[in-house]
Image (tube, rainbow, N blue to C red; front, side):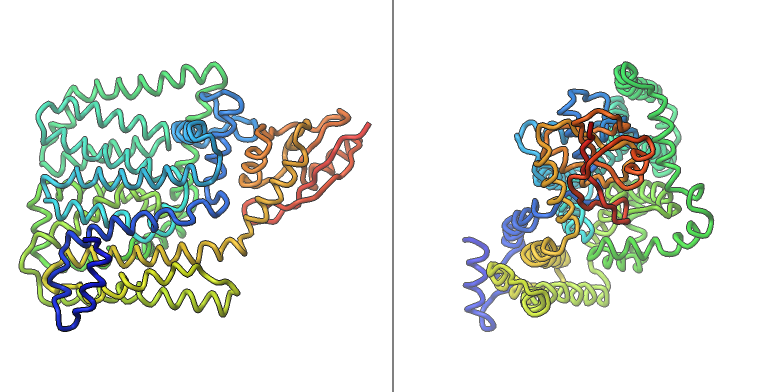
Length: 552
């Protein structure tokens, strides 16, 4: 029977019936499967490109337009900040779908997130059990930062994190499985793919995780095997092949210097001792907030039996050391975003779920805490529906979709389905509560936010000017300050690269320029006519752009 129909049937019997008894964990998993698509997909393509999305899509679009897939550019100039693997993926998505719409990279990101959850389940089910593996996978998808931010955008981080997590598990398998040479090669292959996405972090993860493995098994033999030489050869072969092709267009050494600079910007060398020192104290609270609700379950480590369980279980011990050694990089880095930690997140979640679901019986106070917090999240899911509806009607002059009220039925039932002794069930119900809140968020916050989104005005202005200049020779004046979002929509609308160019006295040529560049044109006595002005921004600073035509 459909789980939603079963819930309605059981409510008719409550409180004299057997609501909590008849609805099994299998029914709850069916409800998870029903709620995941609307939670992850409703209004996914509504917002303009945001965060780093404009850079990724513009580089991909310029690859398609120029045919130069090995020489990435941004505004026609060499782009050094990231290697091109993720841009290749976005370009392939654009070509395969035939669309450059916002939803294309975002839908891919959602699919990768679900693949990531599936890989986590497969990686953990044999050693930690199906319950730990499945709840860890579900917790990843329903972690606050992923569900309400990362899954809404087509960013690089989830794909990169999937590669790094697979690399962690390949390194563990190299010491625990037969034919270790295969896993050595797999680890270095995954590290090379990660390097082709984000550069040096994958190398750092690779080296530190081998050290974590050696410490966890109390043996340095995995670090001394000749298999490393084959892996290093594979790594250098892949990167060397790309560098060789790239050298036909530009100096590969420039990549290394820029990538090194990008990495050092996130350390004490760039931010100073005071910012780094204060970050040491705020970091745990930042992580605890962004990865709710599951960070609340860290309370399990107040039990000495939980700490002992982690030490005795070989996989959990490896995960603990891998997490502890690698997280130091971010704990000491003031320029840290929670999405940079997504490759370490399943490690922490497995460390929580392992003892939480395996130790029996748990402390009575802990069981009561889990039951109360679970019901609080269920209550939040229930109250979010009328609260959001009334808030937006009375304070934002916006009427949410009536579909919002269809969430009341599953939200109401969650409160009554908790069992004090069933922690696995409690975890599923918390995840369901968060999914319901995300669907309510999709139906209210996302559409209302777009009514007042400043980026929407930038998008519409860029598209309007791009349409007006179709078929005309148009350049971006050399040092013009422009936001990548404006650049992305110019490129998408015109299907041409808006390349930076030093203004010249060529009558009939059009330029997009800011005020300082117009001043340079005046000093060079280049005659022009301002055809239109439109807004952009440079970082957070508003900038007025001018569409000008060079006159005879």
